[in-house]
Each structure stands twice: as structure tokens, then as C-alpha cells.
Image (tube, rainbow, N blue to C red):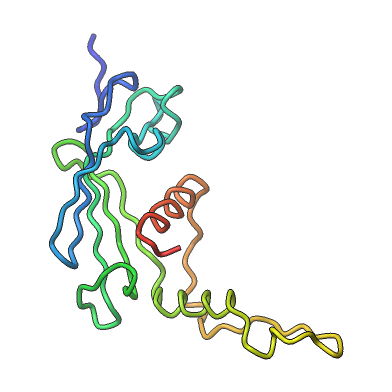
Length: 170
């Protein structure tokens, strides 16, 4: 009896089709990249016999990543470059436009990048040598409990961190 795979899936040992199309909504461009330049855990989404995500070596089937669509918008929902975006969403697809995964940044991404930059760059007075011990000032945030989103799993977080770095958002 032949194995039944989900749509777009293949044997774990089968090779990747070869390239990944990175599509950007803000400028309607597409970049075709060689899949061999990326780590295996990025170019394949694999699952065990129960459908749980696993590495390729322990998988019952894998879906090769062949398309990544990035939608980046400003505070008003207008398309902008990812580095200027208030929100970025990324959808991944396998062969035949088989949906794999969707990831979205937290709201207020642009504001968070500004806060991160401020924390990395000390104010001019901090550059002076202190004459007395500095007191601890806790980080204050304007975010409310409604802004909280469930943390991603380790696998998704590491993938999201890599994508953010690739997009220049990290």
C-alpha cells in the first residue's frame, strides 16, 4: 500500500525542488533564491506519523518551502518596506501553493524598533563617567495586556528570528 501524504508533501529523503520565491507586497517584487543556501530546518517543514513537527531525520513526510510572501504595512495599513513597517506578516507555501505557515509580528513593530534602538544607544549623559552610583530605572512600556500575544514555540521563534535578521528587522 502506498503512503498517503498531505498535499504538497514528499518523502523526507526527497530533495528540495531547488529554489524559493520570496515575494514582497510593498513593491510587488519577487526574488528567486537557491534553496541550498538555507538551513534544512528552514527549507523543509517535516512531521512525524502523528503530524507533529520534527526534524527531517525523524520525519514521516516533509513539505519543501518554495514560496514566502511578505506583507509589510505602516500604521495606516499602507504597503511599506519591511524596515519601515509597523506590522509584517509572512506566509509560507509548499509546491502547488500548499499553505504551510503564517507568522505575524506584534502590533506597533516600528515603535518597538525605536525603543530597542534607544536602549542600545545610551543617551549622551550616560557616556560620562558617573560621579556617584547610578540608580536602577525599570523599563516602562506603553503596552497593555491587550497587546500581549502568546509566545512562539522555540522552533517558530528561531525561524522568526532568522527571518527578521534576513529582512533587516533585528
